[in-house]
Structures are given as structure tokens and as C-alpha cells.
Amino acid sequence: MICSLDFGRYRTRAMSLNADRPEAVWSSECASTYMVLPRSEVVRCALREQGIPMLNCDQSILVAGADQERVRELSSLPPVPLFTNGRVPREDAPARQLLHLLVQSLLPDPAGSGDLCVITVPELSHSDTTEDAEFLERLVRMRGYESRVLGAAEALMLSGTRQYQFSGVSVVMGAEASSICIARRGLVFSKEILSECGNLLDRQLAEEFRMNTWDTAGVPYTDFEQIRHWRQHLSESSGITGDRRVARLVELIGESVSRLAEAVLQAVGGADAGLDTTAQIPVVLAGGVAKTPGMAQQLESELHQQCNRRFRFCVEVTDQPDQAIVRGALVYGLLDSESGPTAAVRAA
Image (tube, rainbow, N blue to C red; front, side, top):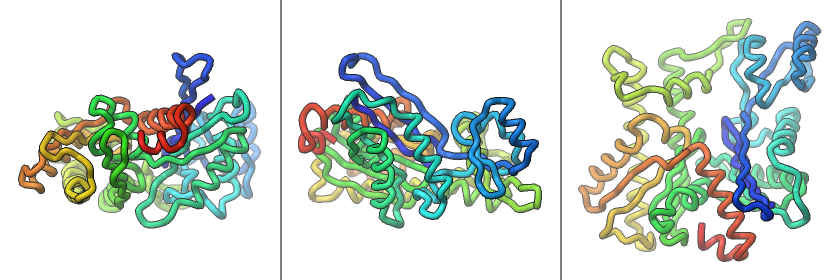
């Protein structure tokens, strides 16, 4: 059995492949959040009547997984992320327990010893995530799997650039950071993590336009889920006339794309980038921010403008951007299992 887990800020996704049935790929996903409900007998009885699992914690009741949708009306608070600011919560024992239950539910029973699970973890530009990766690896090993850790952009390179012989630039525009990978025929030449991210955009919008929700005491909370849904479901036909929020979003994205293009050009122009810069360079995007309408076209235009057309780029959002990272991690696991870790590193 070979599996992959993509631990995301908002959703965690899993894929698995049984060696006995290589044609069948199984996938599932679950929210990386939980709902906090008041700890009262009324709420507890309502959850019991609906058969919803709950976790008692101090003065609250926690509900995680797909059951969150069924209890939204019971709380005025937005969902709470299991990864606090993108990190595994060190002091939040209930959240760590919920992460354990999440892994247990998403990964199938291992078929035997030596089964492998490749994981990607939320990447941050401002701190080391080694400790987070080690904790998540322990959860995977407790489920009965051997573990490997892979960067999100390297996973995207494996799943999104097959038509380019695994060469070019892969960019994952995530919730807490963006990551870049430069590779030629699967050999990684450069990796970088930037602070450009979806939460930065959404937090600025929330502060400027009071896009918040409030609890019963009147305390405001940024509802990232609501803002993200609004941002990703805009259409180019909606335009920006008369909508200050959309106009501001366009401005913020423009600033973020400009910095992202600068980082890509620095990596591509490096002496050891390994790319054929006389040919068109493919750039493949994934991640939540990449789903914003017009993102690929805007990045391509910015790249050409900043390099004065010294390079030629073709920017595209990969097919099924939500599953691209977990799919690439599964490919990495297949390579690791069949050819050994060295070959897998070269292929990624």
C-alpha cells in the first residue's frame, strides 16, 4: 500500500494505491478545522440525537470533520484551524488529538509492514517547520506506515509537468506561504518559500472592509472561509466597477504577483537553474490563491514585463489544483517504492 497526505491549512487530502490493484486510486479529504460549541446539555443532546461525534474540552464542545457543516447554526464563530497560523499547535492538546483522529480516518488500514505514506505539511516563510513535520510523521507511523516528507512545490512538479518532461517552474500559492520549485527532467535545481499567501490577502481585506463575524459577546473574528469562498468564486464578467472590495483585491493581488514574479525570475536566471532559457519556460500553478480568476494570465504578463521579454513563459493553473499536491506526493511514493529514495529525489 502506498499513500499520500497533503496537510493543508483548510483541508487535508489523502490518496492511496494498492499494489494488487494499481488501476484503482482511492482518494478522500476532510476539513482541517473544527467547530467550537458552547458546552451545555441542550447542545450535547442535539448532537447525540443527530449521531454527531463530539469532544468535550473545558467549557466547550468540539466537532470536527464533515460533521461541522451540520452544526454551523449552533455557533456564531467561524471554524477554528487545526494548524494555528500554519503550525501544529504545541499547547493545544485537543487540536493535536483531532489531528491524530484525522490521520486515523483518512488513511486506510495498512496492508502490511513497509507500507509507505508521503506527506506534505503547511509551509511557512518565517519559521522552521521541522518539528511540525516530525509530529505529523509520528501520527502516520502510529497508523502503521513508514513516512516521507515532501515539499508542496516538488509534489506539484511531479503531478503537473508531465507534459513538459518534468521540467520548468512549479508554484504553490498556499494559505500561509508560496513555494517555488525549479526542475529539469525531474532533477530539482532550486527551491524557495515566500511570504506571499492567501491569508495575507484575506486578512488585509477583512481589516479594511470589516469582513468579520462576531460572537455573542461582540468580539470580531476574521472569517477566512467566507472571504476565501468569495475570492475564489469571483468571475471576470463581474468586473470591478462600483465594488471597492474587488478593486482592492485586484490591487493586492497585483502587488503579490509582482513579488512572486521577481522571485521566479531570480530562480530561473540563476547560473545553476538548469533550464533551457532559449525555449518557452512552463510555469504551473496550484494552491488556493491560484484559483483566483485571471491569476495565471496576470503572472505571465508580470513575468514578461519584469524580464523585458528576455525569457518566454507559459503560465497555467494545473488540472484539479486542489488535488495536485497530494497526487504528486503519491507519485513520489511510487518512485520511492519502485526505484529507491535516490531515484525518487531525482525524479521529484
